[in-house]
Image 1 (cartoon, rainbow, N blue to C red):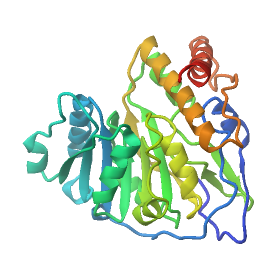
Image 2 (cartoon, rainbow, N blue to C red):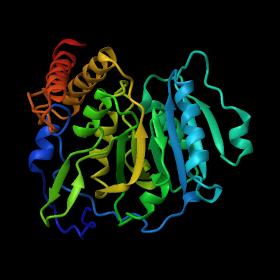
Image 3 (cartoon, helix red, strand yellow):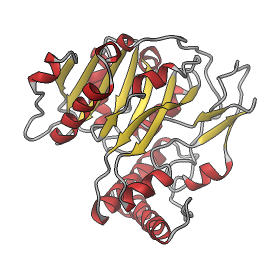
Image 4 (cartoon, rainbow, N blue to C red):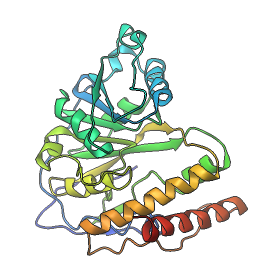
Length: 316
């Protein structure tokens, strides 16, 4: 359990926390907020206040899984006010089967021709009617706690980092989960409370007013890596971020070595792109250890570092 957000006076500082941050050091943990804005978000919400926004590129299967999972895990009273799917140049174009709407899901299908998930999320956020925007990826599956879990943790923060677990049990999925690949590292406020350094939009709830105040996602970051990190850091200028550990989603990771390598090459390139916007931080990948020591985890940790290094130094 994380501490509730405490009153922030003056210009409080934040520092990365020990081992958890170090194990994430080959991703983005060199970035952390140094101060927080003073804005306080609402302390109460209900499902109708939430607009779900999902960017999609060539993942019809993932969207079908996501919508089906909502029908199976949430009652109609727990459905979000709207589910906004933003088709980002899919070929063939994304389709929504009529039975999802017939069963009570308010599905809105939009199109975004600008490149990248940042632009697609901005398109969805601009039309969203809810006071809160829940960002999920098209590879994610909601669980029974996805929306209710967030409501348990509302404490005045302007955005919340939910929990992302692996849907599979293969060696790659177990590694992703043990390394907390999709969990933002902890920063510690000078009062001692723990907060996420930034957000990972595989599962993140953002107060729309704060999102609009910072101008949304940076659309110059066109890859699917780093745009959510940047968003979370800029949200700190408005107010604090908090963890929502009971708001779970499952992530369907692609299996195989090729998908593993491609993921971390992309993350390494994301580090390089972020370096332009945060030149004070050294975002070059550094060697690290597997959090759960086993033969396969050690092997994959080495492959992760090598892929990150290649993406950062060699991919333009």
